[in-house]
Image (cartoon, rainbow, N blue to C red):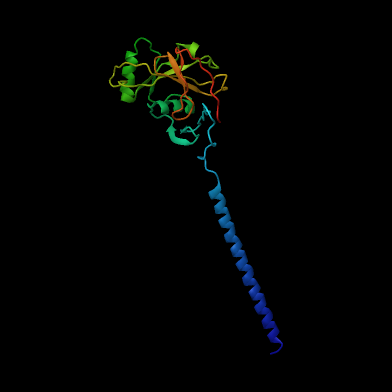
Length: 233
């Protein structure tokens, strides 16, 4: 009996060591899970933005989309809402964002080169899209002297709309236009769409700064010349 007692003590000590080792191992595993979760929660989200905007006037670079979803940003560089390829848009901000995002006009824009009153084109457009109809005449052929040269020497124009636009099969197209280049201008680089808006039929223009509500200073017949805007990011 005296010989077996030390063996019993040794067995109990060995068993106690195993229990402590397993407990330590389990605790270490739980710590790893908590650390991993904390790390995931502390990761920056895609909507944190680039930081505080600079002082003075600025633009942000367009963010072209290869998919069917694009984004409209606010003045802080945060995603404000989504826009969708091949969808109808009539709001000025949405149409401008659509052009710089998808290098095209929204699906409710009816392309026509008809220049003699657009009577037939307006009727066809209205039949297809109702009061969401907008005319897209393609190449812009007016006051190039007010605009910076596009890198391919081409600007396009598209109707914005306004009160009374597309309320019937025949209407006055009004004075509101979006004029844009898809290939860019030398001040901003190649393949960077630039959009301008005119509310007075090409007398003056304002540049879209690629975020919601972001429009530059009017230039043109008011005696002010276009000048480039600093790019924030």
